[in-house]
Length: 345
Image (cartoon, rainbow, N blue to C red; front, side, top):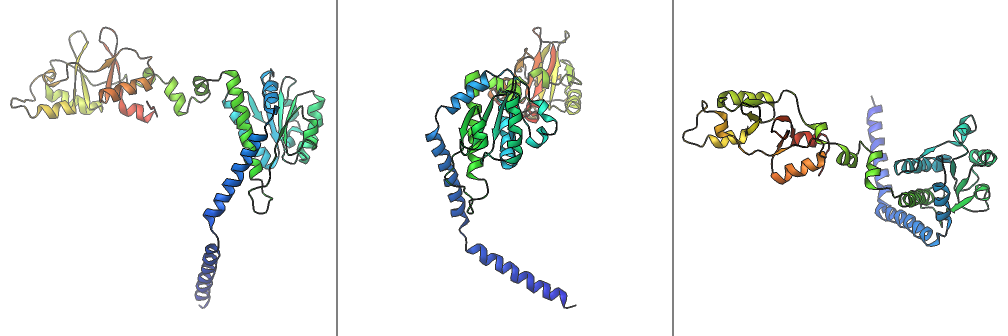
């Protein structure tokens, strides 16, 4: 029975101790210091950069195969991201873990490939054991390490230095400034290759078809327009029947055609509400009487959906009717469909 009160008291004491400990630290100042330290590391590296980036770019550009990135621990995690950046920006690349390489995956490295090996110390055991086999295959090696005198530095055909004055970690132990610099150098190398290859926005989108840029550059009106169960009525249809079709069609609009199935107007919820203010309004009148006779249409289903969205926004409407040259209805493109597809103008 006494255990619960005792535990409650202990919890209060522990909580107050934690609060007192937290009050002793200025975390905003600590965070600022970390950012400043890592930022200075990048500035120092930029100032010291010589011709090693040019050498690395030329080596990769002349490569007929893939760029294989490898590393262990934090360097491996950063290397995986670097490989992903290369792959999405026009340089075929993948990450290979040194341990897996030594147990069969060395076969993934071909004679036409280039290897980018990352190790801050330049002496990571698993990576160092792998390097002689890379050299045995005569595969060009780009190394990122702290010193040229390290094993990785000595064996590299192109050496990119990872000079770090100090880690942002207060113990000087956890990879912080060094991993930030490694990642930034990988980004710099990828951007250099993009420039060298003339890699354009459309190329980027082709590798990211599911992203917003890919959708904007590749999704067409024909991919999104509705073509089935469209709310279409003839121009002689009484308004009361047209209202039912508006409800069934779930577009807030009914499409009106003549005897030759050509579009002659559309009637929306808004058109009907405005018509209610007319003194001679009647549900028995033909729907065309209250319709918009010059609806906004388009005849190019191959138009980019993003361009169609720009038209919708410019016209301040919610629906575009897609027709052929003879004004026969092919489909409709609704603003909601564009929004749901993630299309942005």
